[in-house]
Length: 172
Image (cartoon, rainbow, N blue to C red; front, side, top):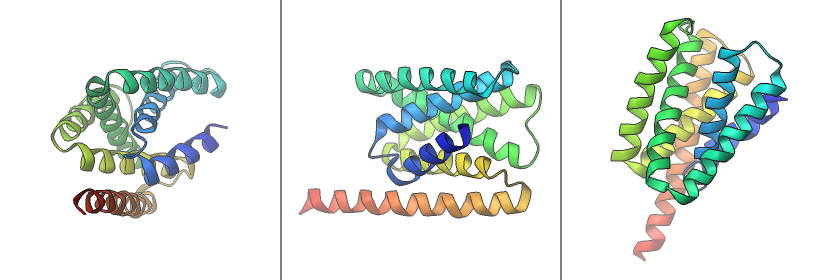
């Protein structure tokens, strides 16, 4: 079940992460909720999904009412989740290293989102979508890294073209 949710979220983030900002924020909350639940408790998968859905819904509500706060929080969580996804590909996802990598990725994500909103959301949503998809298919090392890179490029290209079209329409 979690694999299906990750595929849907991953594709949604790749194609429309910037345009559906609330989806980006909700997905970041869902990912964080699931990852924290999985790492903190060895419970059933449905528990991680429920916690992820609750956290994701709270984040979506936050995005609708407190956009600037939601932007920073989503950037932090997405950045942390992306760096953890990359670390997982290379086997650096154990112990205290998980928290250190999450915080480093979170800080980078929050800075990117604050400085370059549209392109940061495009990049982070593409990275997060690619990380979800690569995890679903359990690709490791070189194959996982290559698939991750290709999927990120596709996501950035799709969303970048959407942004360019919107900007052209505004200027015409």
